[in-house]
Length: 134
Image (cartoon, rainbow, N blue to C red; front, side):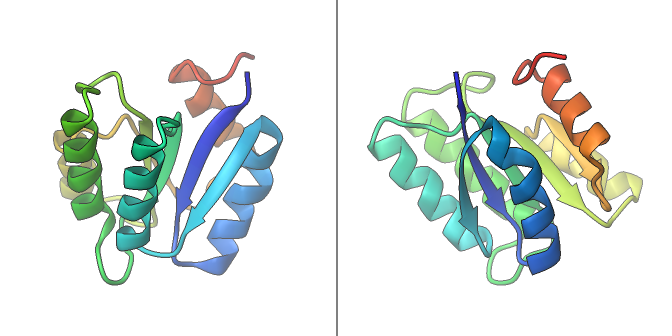
């Protein structure tokens, strides 16, 4: 079954790399910042077509990824998708410090990938999350 995915990434190169790697797996929507990501998740939940996967950059303009993550998890909860039943969210960033990584997991992300994101690393993470078979 094809996946329904959202890439929230303000950097055009990173966005295109993820788009190229995820398109073979299903339908991919794009958001350029955290506000657009939250709006896309809201619309997907309202249409009863929630995302299976969200790749969420931590450093974005207007609304950063960690704030967007909290808003997305809140939207899911209000739409009867308790933690663990909503989208798998992979935080993507060039930041590698422990505070950023642990803070993201503390806000209920499912995985963390440091840039540059390789095809092998992304696909292994998708396998680990149960979204893709080997």
